[in-house]
Length: 247
Image (cartoon, rainbow, N blue to C red; front, top):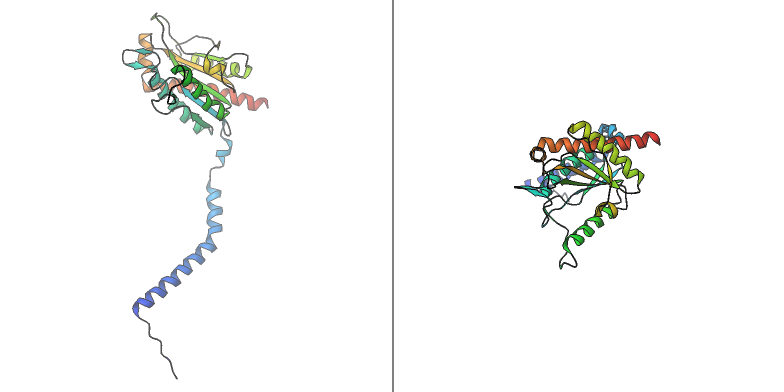
């Protein structure tokens, strides 16, 4: 008996799709190793040689949320230091570092319900983020203000009794003097909560004075904020490059 098979156009279409899928799978299985090898070969080798590869930094833009920091007119410390921190973060990341920011918006670190004084709880929660990250360096960013309109200039404070902190502070201060060209201030040990409670090397950068009319305008200028961030970055880069050279 002779059996004749009849196939409909729909069946033929399904068979064609099946054969096409099998062919594509076979082709991918054959070419994938070569494609993958070429992709890895195309990756920039320089990534491994970035100056801050493997380093971890925590940036703490001071204040935030309920706490504006120092104020003059409509200028608020919390807003200025957050903008500087964003630029500094980008510089550090471009150099290969891992960067953690305690805040990336106008927020505070109060838990609900509030237990104890607001500021104390805010600072304790902030420092928990810092110490859990175990950074190579912790940088807290602030701006200053006093009763007298006379004083101006960026200044770096460092964690007391920590030679590494002092060394980082010195390099950052040198770059602030060089890049900004408007301060002759020197580094000092700082008796600040964030420095005293940091488990790592730590510095606090006072980026300038809102109480000085000319400097206040500069601190609100994005171009000047970028210069401050660049100076801090330059000091960090010099510090870690010198450490690598010493090792």
